[in-house]
Image (cartoon, rainbow, N blue to C red; front, side):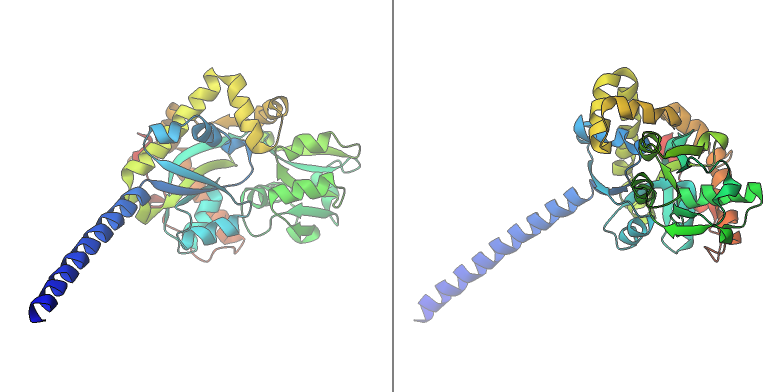
Length: 332
């Protein structure tokens, strides 16, 4: 009996050792895979559409990174998901990333995506002819931060109009555009494809576009700072994939428009019209826009403008250190 018991005990130990070895191997594999996975939050904005080229044409995979493009229209939702590490980064405007950093969520901007040269705008009923005519009108605009609100407040300030004189309806840019096209509000601060859709209604027109204020609405990808430190190769691969996707758009326009249009819910022709108001940042454009730590480019200036502006509006209490929310290394 003692001999039998000893044999059983030895078999038990061997089995446990085998299980332990398998568990260890599985864990290491999972951790290795997770290091190459980036959950990236994106809104339905044509300026982000080359990301879908990178996904559809296998550019992410070729460069050794697995990117999940997760549609989230609300900046608040994206920021919350980033703080909880459900996202490792998200695409948004520079001023939005400033708010994120000021909310004690450490982020760094790693690549510039696009600059709006008419891709954002204010759509309004045809009888509304100027910004001053918006006083007392129902205007759909996202009032908890973001590109639309930042730009709208910037324009109102230029015209000496008090935001309190506007009957603001808080909606994301996409929802604002949809509400206007459905004739539920008098005006909306939105972006493409809703500017194009508004022009096709019998009651609406585009009151103003971002072409009137170049450089104010620029989008970048910001990542969790801890992720960039632990996974620099994955972030570098993401940035490289963006550059290659933009090049694919330039050299294979017909196929690119089909891919991007599908992601944006537009026909290739509609998307091409929408893209007239957008300038993509390629590799060379990024190098100029970022500059270097010793000689910062326009990104640093716009980030500082966003911090100053949001503090004046009391949306943030403290201005983040601008040098800490830009990582120059990934575009060079």
